[in-house]
Length: 263
Image 1 (cartoon, rainbow, N blue to C red):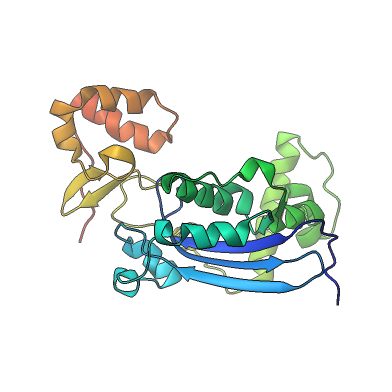
Image 2: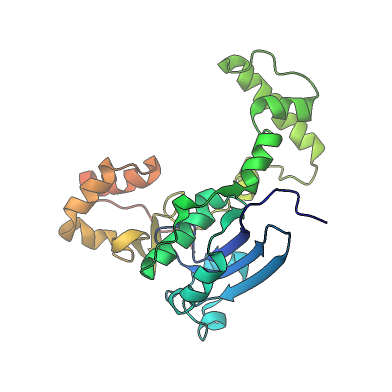
């Protein structure tokens, strides 16, 4: 069977597992790729890589790859020639690859002193096709769950009423959904009790609240109060979520930090 998408150059469909969800700072642990030639011939390759940094337990819980598993594996830089050759002259495809997988790969090539040439490649993000062909907006939800048109779409009152109707219909359609708001919140966005804010920019480590991103990762906020005032003020004015900014603002204004999580 011929490939259903007409190709004038190879298409690499790929996926990665990484140490986290930030393409700029996290590292690739596993890279799997299928190269589809214009004649439909497929070649596949998978690389298990040592990221050179500790793999957080919360990401191991997702993909099952531990530090022990990759301790003797090559690094991305060790395999960059092989990976570069596999992707040479190819367009790219993945699921949510535009926002995550492609930027991760581009960053790894840059760290290895290479240019991935992402801007010269065409992208076929399968998730974008899915969302274009199967809309996931409120109007589509009302049609799917309530079996009616969404009259008055984009009016706040009509949208609020429609959202409530959809929620009721979802609870009826899916009897296994959690039955309390607390359980539903955890089901939809699982929380790590050691994270002090929703996105985990600040995290409790050995009972101390520490920065959990960027160059200051691992530094204790109480130490930064005396030595890193400039950084703290930068953070408060930055484009960060309000809950994280308020932690730093309270430290700057009142000299207080939130209580650690209960054991």
